Image (cartoon, rainbow, N blue to C red; front, side, top):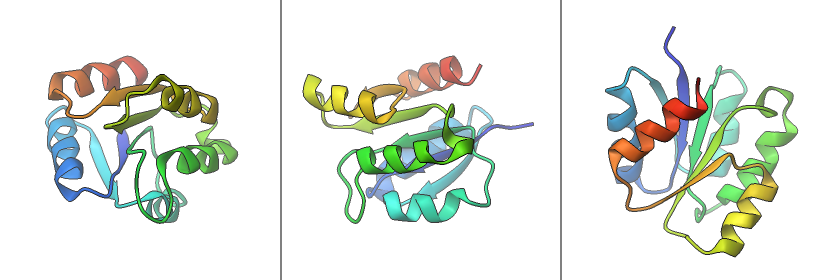
Length: 121
């Protein structure tokens, strides 16, 4: 059965690129435009991985990760930050919130595929 990935980004073009890249690999994609939208979609869905931006309106990626990690079904789900931020302090904040990995934009599709396959074994 295909794995389902939630992609969270306020940029429609980034969501489309993530969806296009991962759909070709056989993954199902659910899209959300910010952290609040993402939280509204996770209740009913069975999600195997989350790819989230950091800087978004309404709820940023770090807050989203903290909120997801409070939910029992997201305790061990891989969460990848996909962001323009590359400072070590931001990465440390993401890691302490519960991020599994960090990819800096602009990203290469192969990089996203490699990380996804590694964390979804």
